[in-house]
Image 1 (cartoon, helix red, strand yellow):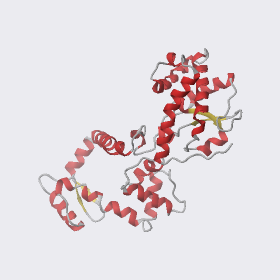
Image 2 (cartoon, one colour):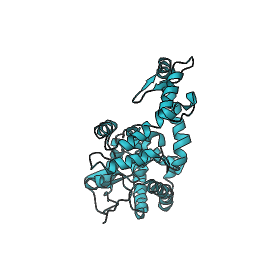
Image 3 (cartoon, helix red, strand yellow):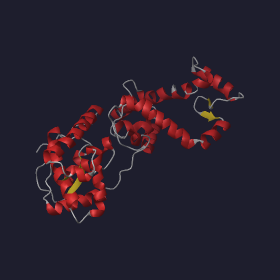
Image 4 (cartoon, helix red, strand yellow):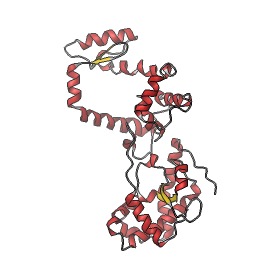
Length: 306
C-alpha cells in the first residue's frame, strides 16, 4: 500500500484526505531515511528499502497490517473485537458454504479457491470498478480542480515524446529569435519546459510549453514559475501559434494546434482571428488558476532570480 501510493502522493501531490495515514507514513519514512529513499523512487526500490528497514519503520508499516486485511472482511464476518477473533471468525466463514474472500493468519492471508477463480476471471472489470469509485467518490472530492487524476494512480504515467512539439518550435526558431521568458536572453540550445509542471497537468499540450535554456530545465523541474511571468509566457505563445498556423512548411504537424481548442473552445481557424491582448487574456485566465491549484496541492515555487 505504501509503495503503490508513494508516487501518487509525492510526485503528483494528490491528497488522500487530512486524516489519511498513508501520506503521514510516507512523509515520516522519507524524513527519517537519511536520503536513502527519495520522493520519486519506484515501487520495487521502496518495497526493498522497507523490507531491509522494517524494524526502523515498523510502527508506520504495522498500522496498515492491523487495519486493512481485517476490516476488508467486515461484510463477510462483521466487526470483531481483536485480532484473535478476526482470525477465528475468518477461518470459520472460509469453510462455510458461502465462504469469505480469504481467511487470516498472523502473517499472511489465504484466498479461497472459488474466490481466486472469480478474481482472475473478472480482473479487468474489478480493476475498472475499483478505480472508477476510488477516483470519483474518494479522490475528486479531496482534490477539486486537479486535472487527470486517473492518470496519476498506481504507477508512473509514461511521458510521451516531445518530438512533434520540438519540430514546431524549431520551425518557429528559424524565423524568430527564441527568447527565454525566465532570463530574457536569446536561446541557442533549448529544452521545452512545461510552464505548469507536467506532474500536475500530465500532458504535453502545446499551450503549456515554452523553450528554456537546457541548463535551467532540470533546475525548474516540477516547480512553479513566478506568476508575474504568465503574461510574458502567453505573449510568446501568441506569436508561436500564429507563426505555426500560417506556415506553409509544416502542414503535417498542424493537427497539434488543436491543443489550443481545448482552452479557447474554438476551432484553430477562429483562434487566429483573436487580437494579441484577447489571446493573452484567454490563455492566462486558464493558466493562473492551474498555478494556484498546483500551489495549493503542495508544488513549490521556483526561486529563479534574473
